[in-house]
Length: 386
Image 1 (cartoon, rainbow, N blue to C red):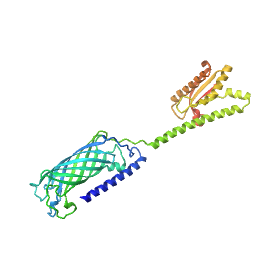
Image 2 (tube, helix red, strand yellow; image 1 turned 180 degrees about the vertical axis):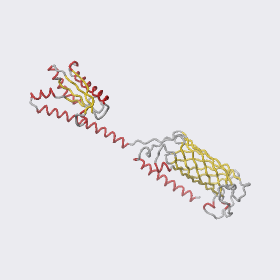
Image 3 (cartoon, rainbow, N blue to C red; image 1 turned 90 degrees about the vertical axis):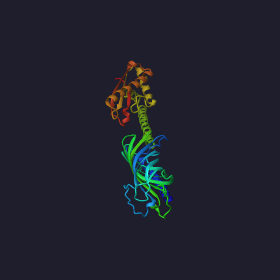
Image 4 (cartoon, helix red, strand yellow; image 1 turned 180 degrees about the horizontal axis):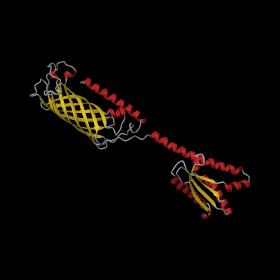
């Protein structure tokens, strides 16, 4: 018995190690097939099972009698029933308490008369969902293969005897709906030598012949209680990468706008007075916007706009304000409205600077691709009307 329990402990340790490795591998897998999950609350992932079984008994007392080993012989087989309550702590590891029994056999000869043994067993069993452990968690998977192992106690109600036991088996489960699974299960319960209610002493046998053994095949139904699925864990690295890319894009747009302003300032500074006035009158002044926005990206752009506004007021000139969007993003209808909103934004700034609204002609030209880089197309221009 001790050797079996040691073997069970080793199997449990190895399976948990395999699960940990599988969870680590799941981090980078395709989400539809395999991914890491967050641990659910205590009240999630519970289940209840009920089944009907066919049981075959092999008693230690039959050693040397030469009886048929067929599990269908009447002197060693009977139907039975079971009920179990359990919980999955991860998609791959669960625990259940299983009670099974009712009609058993005490196999001391091949006579079916008088060898009835009303009994029950209670086993605490660790369950390993190999489908999730090996292939990764998939909420849409229909079939799962689940080996299990555990230990417990059995009682012969007919002979009023108790015996320690251990159990091992394999369950095959099929998903019917979110709450219901059907399963087929086969198992072995190995008991102390008085598990069938009869103890005739130790014959010096080992292994199978030194214990009372119960083999069973069972079919049943599994009902999930409460929440049965597992939530994905946030991919922190992916979120950080996305945020960083957005920050980099904004920085790039700001650098482009600053470079354009600096270029215009340098051109104005290097021109002769007459040429400067002529160039100033004829050159559109640009105000830049972020992707999809109609609010001015940088207030620095308004420095040159204020100079145009002052010139227009001093010379009673009209101003043309033209809005644009970049053609590479957005539909034509969206870009048209966005360009109009950008033109209106700059027109309002001119009014704040003292330009009469009747001297401002604001319009939108929609999406364009005339400038490079693309971000330069997200602008509105101010120019003295011809």
